[in-house]
Length: 80
Image 1 (cartoon, rainbow, N blue to C red):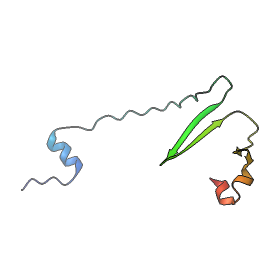
Image 2 (image 1 turned 90 degrees about the vertical axis):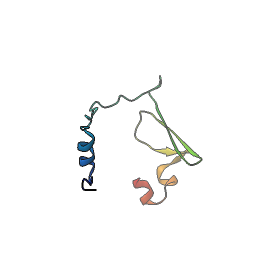
Image 3 (image 1 turned 90 degrees about the horizontal axis):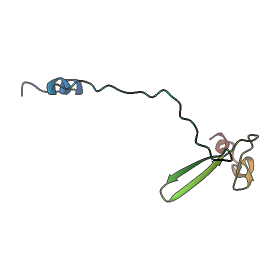
Image 4 (image 1 turned 180 degrees about the vertical axis):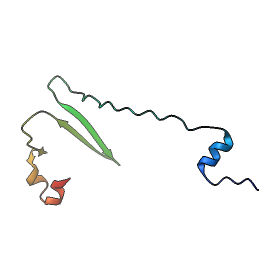
């Protein structure tokens, strides 16, 4: 075993394969909005599902009908 491959670069050179070109999409995605101007997102973890509607407004945040300060009582949770 005189010819031992120690890195990925050496492996690519031994196989005769060059690096594949990387395509970078710099264009920002346009937000998808419904007829009322709202955006919708879903987050999942294990069996839990979170659904979020974001709409244009004054910047007031409410969670399940409560103000952000009442729902997230600790300041650490409000930072997230």
